[in-house]
Image (cartoon, rainbow, N blue to C red; front, side, top):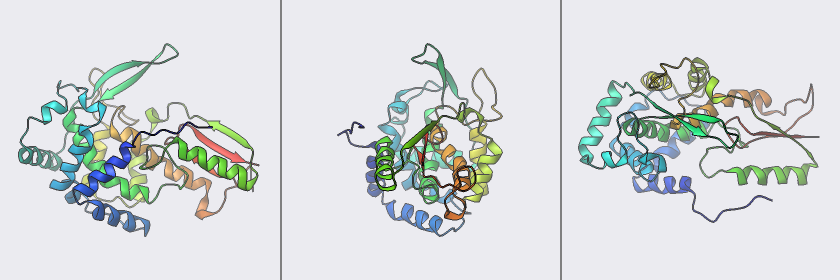
Length: 282
């Protein structure tokens, strides 16, 4: 049985922060419009709004990663020295002509003795990523598969496990296959990701251009990536879910169960964007 935690979810805290800056209604509207398959051609005014930037700062301030410096050697402590109005104007100006800073690369030890590469954007770039993510999230949430649980608000591994137990008990399903797609994050096609976001209704060309240059941000000592999502960035956690939406949609075409081999349905559970997929069927 999964062990449940009593600690407060940081994702719920972000929802409270949105209420504090009176953005809940705006995000709810984005969600409902996305749910009804409307397109979004002017998202940058929301992203660059004073309230959204204030919210982005509040959300990353308590993040442990905010105390880790990028190539400019600055952390959240450096942002705290800015006057609020000047910081907001600075970010708004950067969003008009956005060019990301280099990404600092470090190697994180793994339990098997190997290392995992991690990219650390500058704290200013992380603040910009958070401002964009906050606006993309409700739009993408309306499109995501109901059983996708990884890196989403108010969802977790516990949610995925609960869904598994329910399906086993109610539908008499007993076989589980755990699939891990090797190197998924490092091989995401930038073009396909942007095309998928366009398909989801995100059609603000200025925003898509910014996301494109973020994906291709130079890694210090390595160069400019031709594929994959920036390791350590907020988009590494979230954009691949958008990328995988089309893949999941192929499993359940037009809302109908997909075949096993040719004609057998199965439910799908995601505990991460793609890694850790659980398939259950007869």
